[in-house]
Image (cartoon, rainbow, N blue to C red; front, side, top):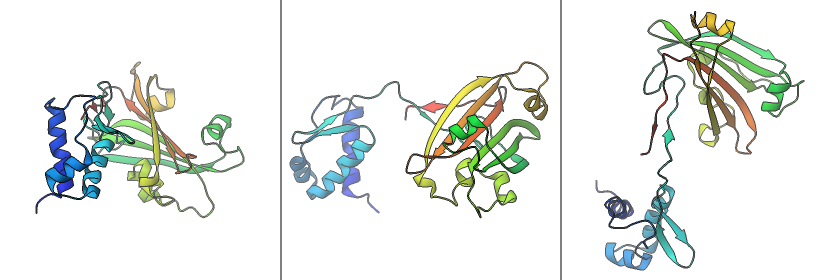
Length: 232
């Protein structure tokens, strides 16, 4: 089955941009010209242009037309999955603890809640080929009657843990990455006997009102994990 015409418009303009036939700042052919060239309606052309804009190829100026966007040469997309990433794949997870706690001042502030509101704490250990490679802690805002199914939690990603309370596509995510020296407890869990640094990835999940609903902190052995970004 042939692709819709608007996809052909998208691919043709991408080829012109990638081959430098159209350069940053150049004007994209006007909608009327594209309608005539491809024998389609203005709505079809606009659908193609909207895709090009969403992918960063062009931008529009009301009343003037569309122009080729200057590429962000220093922009990379970081792909992160706590259970499966390009270098290390977690093949097993062990649930250490699920408990309902009262947050300290720092955690309450991070979750924008009060210290008398309950928070679910989940602690897990991740394994690769039988060796412990990461210590994982999640903090989720607790609501009365919220189901806690330990078997589901054990192997779930952070997003999957909150999927019962809101659609995954509605989540907003922020991530921070740092190198840290582990404390005694994490050293014990990860079988670390020297000064090996950890790669610590902190995730924060927000609802569609931009309010935090959970914090996840995963501490990986520095010799087992690496994150990669792509400019694609």
